[in-house]
Image (cartoon, rainbow over all chains, first blue to last red; front, side, top):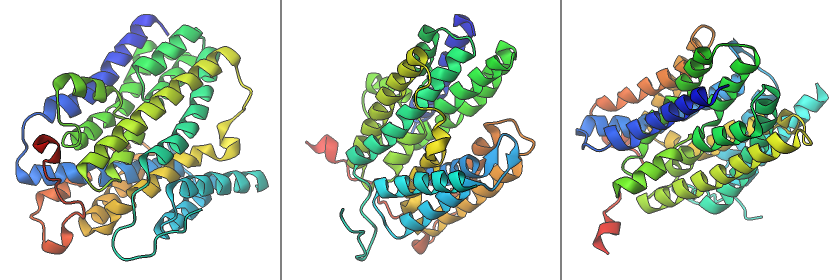
Length: 100
Length: 244
């Protein structure tokens, strides 16, 4: 990878961040759009969780990660502290992976 | 260990510093594996570290380096990586109210707008905590990601595949914990369900990065007028900062 490619990628990645946070976010949004923006994390992050848990490349797969994240969901629902949720998720995944 | 709070009302959000340290450790291990992969794909250690510092969004970096390693063109590497980076734009939009202030501060904050800092901020209840959580998580993951990359690029692979420790599941597990508050109101649950469905339907044929972006469209549910019970739990924070 050339320095040019690397710098174009850096500029593009930073560009997206600035576009959202600084350019678009500057003007006050009308009330309905504000509600949409507040819903963005609720829409984006579960999708990210699903992708990271249930896919490999372009395939949908159920593997050790699903077990780990499933147990993590239970722990989070039972209001376990954050470090416990993350450790339980990793440990169950590692355990299932080691056994299978 | 403190027991879980089974009292009434919303659970206490994770403490930003503890949570950031835990997340930072996982990010650091992935930084090591990124450094190893980058060097094995033919990047110099300088380039690997520059990439972590300047691009600073993990999924895009892994995608770009994987394309390079497979012998793909620079354009192919850029296209996939930038599609994955686009979601940070949506995160930035969601964080504008949290990161009000001087332009210079927001230009610095922008570089730290990633999955981890957004999720950590979103889990907090009031504006001041959200801001604190954003900066703590952003700086902790930034430091760990870059140190990890440096170690991986220079020292190679002492740890091995992070998947062996289940660390690939650590991120979705952490995001689950941070998302619980958003799922305690109806619109949040609807947006989450729609987003997940849209993303998973698109995975088999859409380019990487598109499914998560498309999930963002689920936020358009907010266009409907809210009913009383639909309202988000977090009230708009009073302008405490400006009063002092």
